[in-house]
Length: 113
Image (cartoon, rainbow, N blue to C red; front, side, top):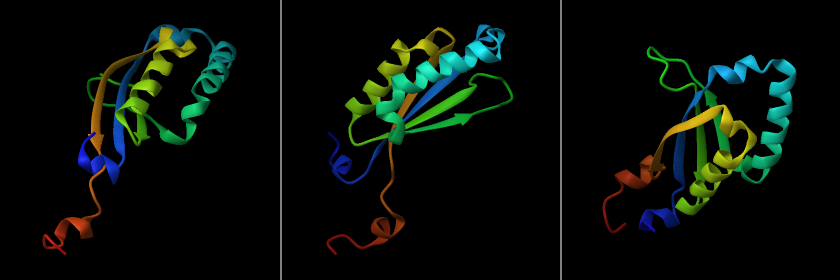
């Protein structure tokens, strides 16, 4: 693990694309799938932030942000999503991993203090 990992959270950005078939399911079926999905992902609920997106080229429809203490936790959340009910309709196109930067004050202190 990176030595900053002891102090700073890892951030996983799951870049997703929703298929047109998902919207064709209709409101009731989408709600049913969403309830199942919420149950499947409940153990990660306090680590997830979902951002519905729009852009100029439509590459991604949703970004799910996973905040975790380890890379393994990000992998577990991504794997759980890929195995869940929404995986048929929402594809994880890419994953970007980063680390929260240290607080600004800590970064500007002279070394050794």
